[in-house]
Every structure is written in structure tokens, then in C-alpha cells.
Image (cartoon, rainbow over all chains, first blue to last red; front, side, top):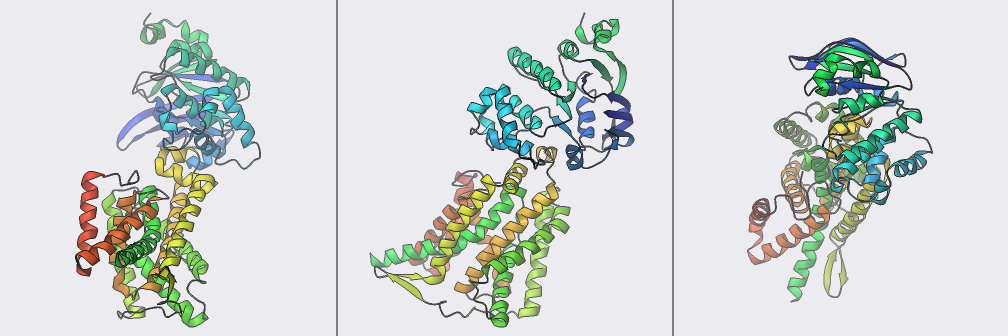
Length: 233
Length: 287
């Protein structure tokens, strides 16, 4: 579904990613693991067209999307829930969700709103409340809901659990499995390596801007080097 | 007593013209962080367009308002898309420089085509007033206030409930997040500037109907819109109405108390006080 080939990029004169190659198949949950500064967010931003690739290519469902407009990429069915959430703080919860469906012209937007409120009853209760007044967990739900409103084929989730209570994190990660079951492929970027790999089918390890390891979740979880470096075991 | 009531009425009605002008200025400022120094010249240009339409088509300026709005809407879209968008994401100084340049070019083109002489739009109702409880309500200014109220409501409905309105609000709150939603920011910006140019033009028509004007009238109009926007807060639908009424009344009262020559002192003194005490504007957030 998504095939990244020898992608390199950076900001200004500083190269951040070197020769990234990565593949995601339809229906998978793929985890992307790496410490702060490894380049995970840069990779996601580049996939979304918020940063330009220097070389290499990105194919999504057979279409080249490397270096294309974000508008075009979103239209192809790719979406991202960004780290830090990026909500429209002064807009109501419902308006945030509707903005997520901006490119859609179909009649089922109302129906999808109800679906999101079904996932997150708290958002339903607060639909007219300003997004900036929500708690951290609710804001993350709103950001995830906003992405889902675009009906993405592939959803990039960047550090959803950052700064949230464990119980909320569990709830969100459970939901990720449910979203996949309903037909959305997922690239999961998580700090909590064990949690992420437990829910993913496969994983890639990003270190210093390069992919240094990849494999099935079970394989990675039992890998001695990974256990020492990321799980502290 | 009667004198003061009339002064109050004059001030409130003056707020109409100030407010329509600020509706445009505040939208540009609030959404794009753009301080448009050519704002006043756009308005004067609209007044000249009203003169031309009256002379050549015989169409009354008030009836020509929809046409003038559309012309400036289109012109505003092009100006933003091809000119201002090129510098809008760089620092504030660049946009100030660009709009200052646009103002300069526009003002001089107007001198070239319309001469530097003062003009006024001659309509049968330009200098007439409605009488009500012994008070004078100049027709043009009264209509301007009504227009301001209607336009404020329409703008609010548009921003709050329409799809493009939501896009404009989202973009004003964060450009990268808005891009991530699949919004084409250059078009959202162009739409914002188109809309505000249309609004500015409506204000310009009312200004031209109630004042004599020349190509040099743009500067004071820009300053007025600036102060009203500071008073009401940038990027709100009701700020221009509130700010326009406050400034209109204060100017009217001040010019009776201190003499008409001190109006500018009042305007700028007010600006200074507000910036020190409530930098977010009287009614909420500034840009």
C-alpha cells in the first residue's frame, strides 16, 4: 500500500533521514520505533507533504506522492494525527471534527460524526465546547477523531500517548486495533516500544535517521539488542 | 441636552462607516496576520468606481453596491493570490512593505486618472436627513450603520456555519494544521482577502457618499480602521461594530469638547491607552 524507497531528507542544510526504505501492506499495523531525535516525526511529515524529500520516492497505492502537495496526499487517503495534536484551539470540538472531513463531499459526514462520538462519548458531550478547554486525553481523542473524519485508508499516528495517563493510553491503543479492524491501515509511532509492538504486526527501528532493524513484532520483541536498547531488559 | 443627544447620534452613525471599513481590515489582520496599509486606497478606489458607475451607467451608488462588491472581490482574490501570498509567510515587515508599496502605486494611479482634486458623489439624498424626535439622522450614515449590522451578522454566519468559513477560521488558528486537513492555504488566503476587499469597497462607497474625497484620503481611512480594530480586537465578527461605535462617539464628543482639530489627538490617545491597558483589544483577541 505504501512503499518508501531510499528516502532522504532534512531541514535546511541538516540531513535528518538517510536512505529510508519501508513498506506497509493493506490492513497492517506497523510500528515505527526510535528514540527522540531519531527522525520519526520528520519521516511522517515528509509522507504528508509538510516537508520535501531530497531524494528517493514514496508510492502510495501505486501513485507517487513524494514531494506532492499535502492537499493531494490527503485526497489520496493518507492522514496523520500529529504529535502535539495541533487542534484548532478556538473552534468547537464538532467544528474540529468537521474540518477533518473538509475534502469530503459525500452525504455520510453526519453519520461519521456519530461514529466518532460512539468511540468517544466524552467528545459527544462536549461537542460545542472549545477544543482548547478539553483535557489532554480528550484533546488526543479529538485529534484522532478529526483524522478519522477524513476516512483515511492509511493513518499515521504520531506519539499519541505522549503525556497521557496510562488508562487513557490503553483506551486509545485498544481503539487503534478496532480502527484497523474497520479497514484503516496504521503506522504507529510510539514511545512505549513494548505496547506498540504488542499491537503491531511488524515494526521498524529508526536510529540516527536510518532504519537499523525491521521484522515481525514477535521477532523484534525477542531480539536481544532491541530488548537492551529500548526495553531496558 | 438636545445638542448632546445629537452629538451622540452623530457619533453612533459615524461608527457605521468606521465599522464597515474595520470589518475588512480586522478580517485580514485576524486571519492572515496581515496589516494592509493599502486598505484606505482600496476604499477610495471603490468610491471612484461608484462615481464612474453613476456617471456612465446612471446607476445609483447604493444600488451598485453588489456590483462594486463583486468587482473588488475578484480584484482582491487576484491581488492576494499573485502578490501578497508571495510574502505572507515571511516576516511582518515584508507584508508592511508590500502593502505600503501597493498603497503608493494605487494612490498615484488615482491621481493620474482622477486628478488630485476633491470629488464628491452627487446623489439627491447625499445631504438629506431623516428627522426623528427632533434629531437629525443623515440618510447615508444611517444606512451605513444598518449595513454594518447586517454585514456583521452575515460575516458571522458565514465564518461560523459555512464550509469555506470554517476553512478560514481553521487557517487563522494554525497554518500547518490547516494544511494537514487538506486545505489549500493560498486559496483560503485569497478568499479571505477577496471577501475583505469586497467589504472594504462597500465601506468606501459609504465614505464617498458622505465625504468629499481625493486620492490622498486613503491614509486617514487606514488609520481609522487600525484604531477600530485595536479597539474591537482583530478577527472577530462583532469587534468592528463595537470598536466603530466607541471611536465614532468619542470622536464626536471630543470634537465638541476640545474642538474639531483635536479629533486625531483623541483617536491616537485612545490607541495608546488601549495598547497599554488591554493589548488584546476591548472585545477579545487581537492578531
